[in-house]
Picture 1: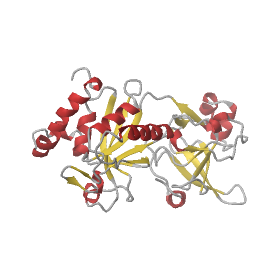
Picture 2 (picture 1 turned 45 degrees about the horizontal axis):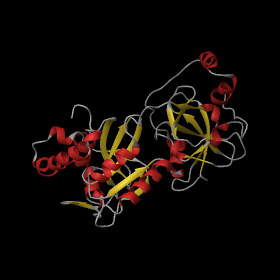
Picture 3 (picture 1 turned 135 degrees about the vertical axis):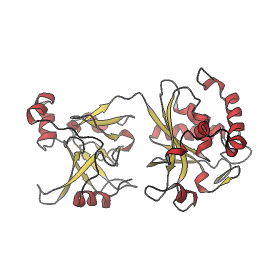
Length: 325
């Protein structure tokens, strides 16, 4: 998660490298954009406050650069700032936006540009809501809603080798990546996470098609494939990194999670200790930790722990399995 000190550092010392670059001539941009889009994005203009209905739109979705399509913001980070311009607390990726000191007014401000094509987006201020404290004040005309067929869910339920092996067999699941989330250290190593000192949980990040499998169905699989009543432990795996957690991205996901946990409260003999928290950052695990069970199924841990859980999972959630199961 970026904070104001990070923004100041980028503006003063240099911005992160973009994933790609898009450069066009002024005439090419004019031909592609409307007059207002060109004025705002290529001539560093500002649209009138309250001139766009985007300020009142808070449905799930993502926003990209109107010029090059680069993903800039997730609607889960959008909030009503009352300023008349769409406002966000975080960019979609750390390197999607570049920051530059703007002295065009009496006070020095931090201008935000698309890091891919250098389109002017707006400014960022340190007066946003916690935990980041940032307010990305954007021109609505510089953004466009991105159509997506995929969604993302992030769960932690013990060793990610186990959780990954279960979700790989579900219909509608496109890809899974193991990693770490909900900690206090930037870019932690696997060894550091295992020490318990970084505060991270082992999690899996699931890309899925919501037209095929719903967030609620994924959540029920999550709650049915680990013990949500054991604090910071799953079987012999003990430590805060093995805690049971649901990291939601939208208020709707939070509501679904809370409803499911309330419904399941009477199913278990002990109290559910699963955390329900807002997703912030995800750090990928080492590459050889992905697809672990499939690549190491004869290994002792896989045979003793994962194989029995996988057999039980297949019986319980047969209706959600891919057709070849």
